[in-house]
Length: 191
Image (spheres, rainbow, N blue to C red):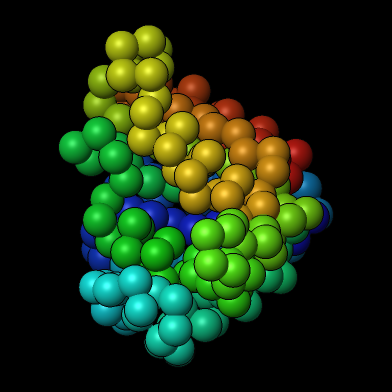
């Protein structure tokens, strides 16, 4: 399996639990015989898009074009990020807006229509860390931001199936150990 791992934690210093999860996944994927390329969003240089015209017509910056090549190469993408204010960090959202634009992720739509999904045939996994218990995020908040990313962004571009792994109570050593074990298993399986 060809896997693109998108590290969406915005801290450029590293050392966060999302980084440990990514390392565990990547090492296990290599042990499982999978090819893996990493996109570290915090290391990319790109501006935020400010208009629909920029999103639809502007040429992406070089760093985004390289990331698009990695996404196009992959059969499966894994996106890791911490839940911040109930959603993904702004840097990851800005990256997705830059990378998943018309001409790459969707065909430009005719007036009043929907664009064709250009990233069909690829699966995805979202790995989201949070301080609260994951069951509370699912039950009370209905995992709204994860569902939105899955349906309104990834499936809209053709990814499927899109699965999610929610890692709650990240301050707990027990929760961290379990999450690392789970990520190792997912990495070995290429899932």
